[in-house]
Image 1: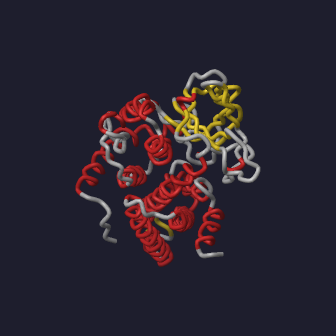
Image 2 (image 1 turned 45 degrees about the vertical axis):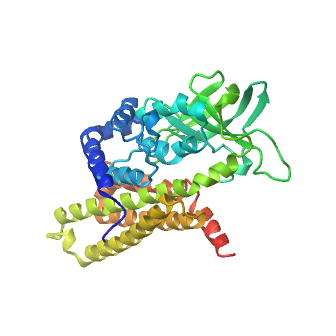
Image 3 (image 1 turned 90 degrees about the horizontal axis):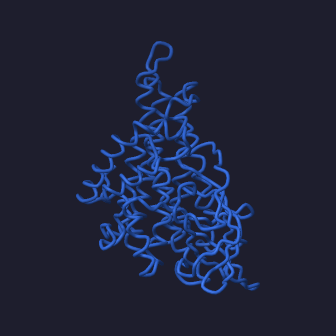
Length: 382
């Protein structure tokens, strides 16, 4: 279906991203999957091309364009090439907005140039072993002592934590028995701070290129100068970026579902059963036709929501609707595509197998499908 989301400038950016992904990422992607991470030099190369600094002010080496559509293009082009940008996506879509919104002048001078050129990698540490979607239950503490905060606690499921130079840590700086959401703050822990340790690299069923680790903080002294935003306001900060974070998952879901259909169409045209191409059977045609309709419905939702996000008008409940619908579409589409591959779909050498395992987490992170339904129900007055 016709899309009217992007301008000529966006399409020029798309060509730049497509060329880089095809030439630099696709040939080495299988090796990165085995290694369980993207190499640092890729971030620097992305930064050199200007792909990481689109939203960062020009004075710090960026383009100064706060336009989420560029982020969308990166995801779409990666999916088109049957790869993912993994931690790049997390840094640009989930983490960078916190720096852009809440970093003070001194912090911008310290961190923005490196974030723009890809020499400073970042992660955000929210989830704890005992808490998932319940951020109000964070137990990691940061006690003010002079000009420092003394940080203690543990975090898990931290994307990009293995190579991160800057880790935004959600910690409790005060406790209000009447309001569990109060008293949370954002502290930026820097690589090399005493007491900051990286634990296990977690072995996941999918998203192999996206390193996911455990982090621990044992009496880490974090300077007050590394407080991001105001003390005690982290819960509201986290809520402000949730619509974009959930849109990021939805965009990836539809882009990868589309890629699954494209690679499946190519396969069924070549694969023969009972002397005929699998594509000639009515069931194959009907299945792919139904999937195409679902993808276009999801794409239309995304495009409308992307424009709302760019205009600052996307509500939390609408972002939840888009994420819920698009991730469920992805699950159905990838499963049905794998079925059309038959036994070969279960073999890791075929991209549909990776698309299948990668897809499962989309209904979990950035808020589970069940949490999305709770949010939507509240907006309906239920």
